[in-house]
Image: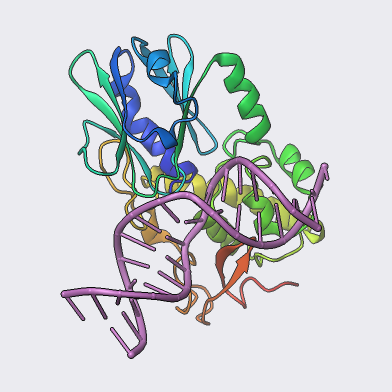
Length: 267
DNA sequence: CTTGTGCCCTGACCGC
DNA sequence: TGCGGTCAGGGCACAA
């Protein structure tokens, strides 16, 4: 499931390959995944790709006029000259004969065409602090205004953008914090550990090419390797790498959360 | 305003 | 081999 490191790797794998290319045809195979589906093809056709950017878990393909905004959700993939199959929902053909496809087994992903103004408005509303760019003070001030369990707030994209279920669990383990720990009760040391671990884990995961749990691959079809470094996600019932006790799971805002009952005690 | 719940969707997996 | 049930979960609509 693509989170910030996976989305970043998709972009890095595609940016050099498709920048500068002209789109000569747009085939919408599954209209449901397209936001402005009626005029989408006409809007995108004949545009030139300038570059690709990331905001949170969103991929922005900047065109010479307007932008494609893409969210991969759970199983979405953007593939350069990839295999066209029954899960291919969009195909973008370039003038040089190459193409970009959007494949998505579960059809949760969404793609829209937005002009610059619409894009800016949308991102401002939906996407919060960028982990790699946020400063400690703004992180702390924003987080401490929130109620509820810390994990709920780590998953809130309008607060900090890009953390999903996998990295939230890993960040909390590294910080020694229980997923249900009340945000308002966090100490200064907890906040500083969280801030450092958010940046550190997302950064290391990005360098490792992201995490491939089921079928994530980047734009080339390359899998990630960070799953080998996971300490808690997917390890429920196994021994904690730190203290040896058995990792437990609980639900937080409907998401499975794995944690160590000793290393992540609520103090 | 915040907070909670169900839904979208398919494949993998499990027990029988 | 098949079959029904359960689980995975990001973001959104909707309700309270």
